[in-house]
Amino acid sequence: MEVRGGLDAGGRDGLDEPAVSERFRLFNFTRRDDHLAYLWVLRAMDRLRSVHQVRVHTEQVVAALNELVIAHEGVLGEGAAWDRLDERNLRDRLDALAEDGVVHRLEDASRAGSLARYRNRQSVYQFSELGYRAYTAVEQVLAARVRDANLSRLVFSDVLDDLRALAIANRAGDRDQVYRRISRLDAAMEDMARRSAQFHVTLGEIIRSTDTSAEMFLTYKNALLTHMSDFMTELDRHLPRLAEAVREVEETGVYTLLSRAADADERLFLRTSEKMEDWQRRWAALREWFSPHDSKAVDLREATRTAVSAVIALLRQITEAQRGGVNRSTQLRHLAEWVFHTPDDESAHALMSAAFNLRSARHLGGAHDDDEQISPRATWWDAPGIELSISLFRTGKTPTQGLPQPVKVNRGIRAELRRTQFEQRAVDKEAAASLARNGPHDRVLSEPETRVVLKLLTRALEARAVVAGRVTHGAGADDTVELRLIPSEAGSTVRTEAGTLHLPGFHLEIH
Image (cartoon, rainbow, N blue to C red; front, side, top):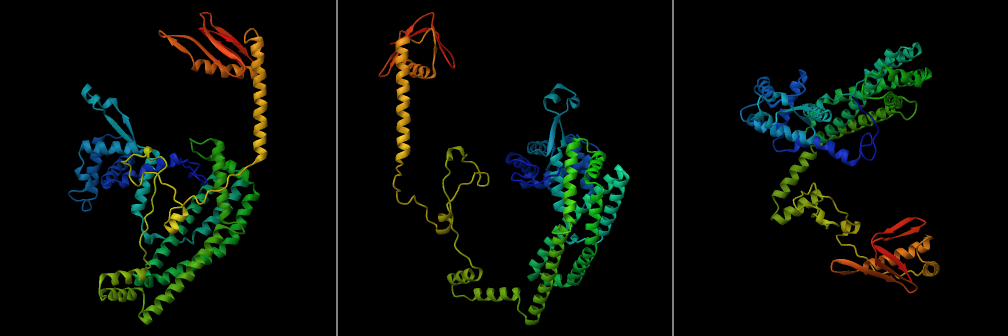
């Protein structure tokens, strides 16, 4: 199932921070000391997966590892990481992969021929969906070759043919043909974006490494310039036609087009509305490539033109350096000779510091606000960071609070608070007088009266006397009335506007 979406603060498709952390755990096996053993275990599981053995036992993984030994004879020698794997170690590694979420661990009771084997947990393992994606991502990185980078100029004619065929299919109402063409266009755009990004990154690496490998650059300079020039020529020739073809497709009805594509989409785990939203995002991305103004194709053309200029400038620089005999290599050799002939170590350090603009390291640190919550065994990588002030970073001095500032006196606010407090006290005093006059029972207490009763009741409960393990009485008073709690088997009830207050075991009196 393919998932697409926009990037936000959390990640792709609105993933929050815990979800992102869980997905990064899928790559934990690449950071372990025996990462090669984990890699070959996953390769063995992938080999079994390719022959439709989804759930595998440790015995099957061992057999697949033996097949990999034969298939990679000469590459894997004695003492390789996988060679030290017995069934127990293999199960430990599979369990570790299950904890990271790369594989699922399931219990297969059918494999237990006896009660003892059943108690020994006959586990079977299978790739999780995200775990398999993490494994294939690692394999793609390991199999990547820098020299595969290229800009495909032939893709523009294919895209133009697909756009025209898409318009014809939408007019004819051919749902399957619409889905087939728009899927090819989406794959072509994704491949073009990947190729262009990879090519310009590789070109940057070539330009950066010319000081140590200028011969390789000179060997491929003509082919490189020809490749980029042909690509720009083909792009300039097709860009107006592609923009016109996109306009013709939209004239046939974009909503109808995307509805037909969503109806023909065979992804089982997506609702029709989700498929429609997905195809709307894909069409918007495709249209952005070939819009008449500020399109991605125009940006790609400008980036390629800038790269051509950089290659020509670099070629001129290398040619002049070879003619004059001065380049980065000769400069470094002269610097090494100067350092070697310095009279002492301090002079050598001073010369190197001046040459490479080195400065002494400033170590900044501080204490966490709640260091008791941080385990003393936590590593530097896992421990939470702390905030540092800009003045400490720039000057190395701890910031101070500065001179105490004068207290701001806001007479208006103080007067308003005093007036509100006076009014509240007057209301409470009147409510207390009403309670002393009418009593708390056989009527519904108002909100001010309820507030006074609860205040006095709190004081009475805090002042309760305990004699021989029993509560005898309690009293609470203010400057107006006194509330008493008298032990009583019948108890008492006080009704208020907010509800009924029950006092089991006590009778309440107010004087």
